[in-house]
Image (cartoon, rainbow, N blue to C red; front, side):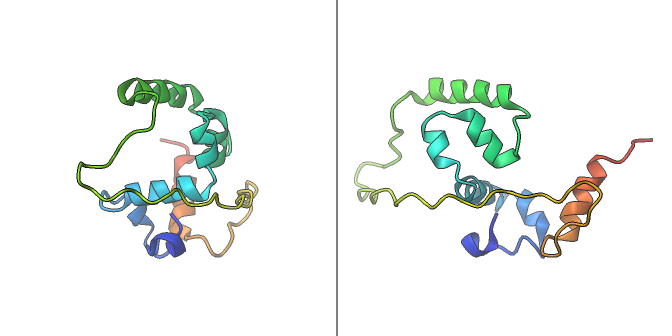
Length: 130
């Protein structure tokens, strides 16, 4: 969730990412800014997953969910307008290819511009339980 794109200061307030008031906005912002739209439009679940996660963990689950959503919504475009609404604007021009996502190597310090609490949470996931 890029603060410059959403106006949300997630660096100083990382809990915004899990706040029900903002998490959808953050997820959509991440999806768009990671360059997922061209792949999503082509049902390319592998490249959407790689863009968001850097790998393919959970790929089969995503493929299954795509099938469920397409069955529920149909294969054509979804009409989100209400009768009497103004016509939706034309789609914006495609964004330029985003830079690759580079994570710090294991055992190295994260870049100083990332919230320490975020990296602490990531590290907590891998602490031995006991």
